[in-house]
Length: 519
Ligand code: XMP
Image 1 (cartoon, helix red, strand yellow):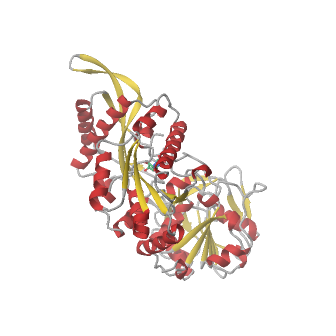
Image 2 (cartoon, rainbow, N blue to C red):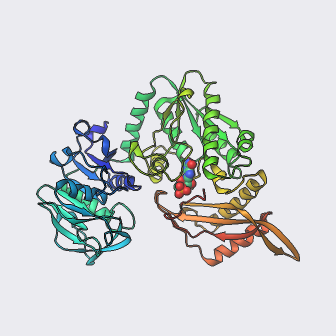
Image 3 (spheres, rainbow, N blue to C red):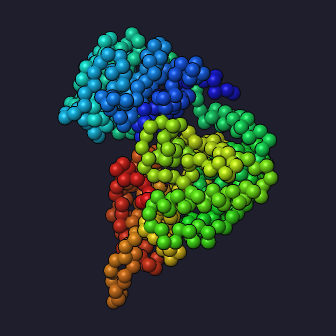
């Protein structure tokens, strides 16, 4: 099976933090799509991809600024259906003869409501309840539309919230239909796909076949080592690669001393029992904890862990003759927040340790077969590859492990308290049957000690915070609404069962504006 046998939709990236969500929405609709930064989209790329439609993403810039990104003119000349989103709409209007304004009264952030002005094929299934809730995030707005366009919908601050030129199949919206806060956004994409006559036949089964073929081609007869973290991502990557190249793969499980209670044993047993993949268990906790000692800056911690991971892999790679590739279970959310996707222009939030490329001196090439997938797509791929369900449904665990759940200085004592607290908390969640309702849950130990009273004595111990979020992909998240009974029962258990903790808080920040992890 070949990627070219699928209809392709091209997403031109202008650097929005949520561009990949457009791809997600389309994949949920079983449409094959590729994201390319706007600078790379030209006649050549279009002839290579032969897309059936193009979406122009949002972006952080203002088209009113000199030198801001523009779409290659060929995009408007090639005769394909187009959908512009936010900055994509503004760039479209600016380039096709409309106008965009910035300044007072042009911005709109957060929830907004759009009303119908005219009907359109793009809006089938919309406005059934008169107004549609949408998510706006724009500083500028379109003040005059380009010739040939008409208005289909408007909001209080976006007179041209939905516009289109039906003859050319050019459409544009000021809001973000790709985010969950636009509840009917998916219908809009579905309508656009139907206008573009794109076949909806892209599935994880198809992805698996294509990925295996690509891995075989890329690796040839060379050897691969895979960094196994015990999480779903690296495990799915390992099993996928193993399916492609068999024993040319060796897995290295690095125990950096920042794992959860019992995790190292669980992972090694799981892999030994279920798979016949050669596995090296590298206990490097002394090395990692030694170098992390005394460090409290989040980025410094991440950089140290990232560097040591590479060093350790290098050490084990050297023992494997002909090892030419290092495989990692890097996912798209890791990529977009570290470096912009495929070179696009978005802003860095956190430097996730497992992306960013390997130093030349390592002499290893990166193999990242999950780099364009979201978490739930990886789980689906895992099911496709027959990984055990209890393993697939585990909450995500970050590569830097407990280090980023221990703000301030990391000490062995604090890590031990954190491990015990986390085990109690997860046990509570499981006992109450909530584990699968929650996307990710963990404890963070805070760099603050508080005064308490237990029995007749004074205590001066650490405060911790509980985190539990619901999310689809880790890009946005809401805190989980535990009952007060659950929270108080859990707090009591933590204080009674975990020596070193005398205060429990619950983190009710959503993402954005927070992030899921504390660092
Ligand atoms: P944030 O904190 O950025 O986390 O909202 C989003 C998701 O990514 C996980 N995460 C990481 N995963 N390496 C990883 O493999 C990292 O450096 C890293 N940092 C955060 C986090 O646990 C959450 O699931």
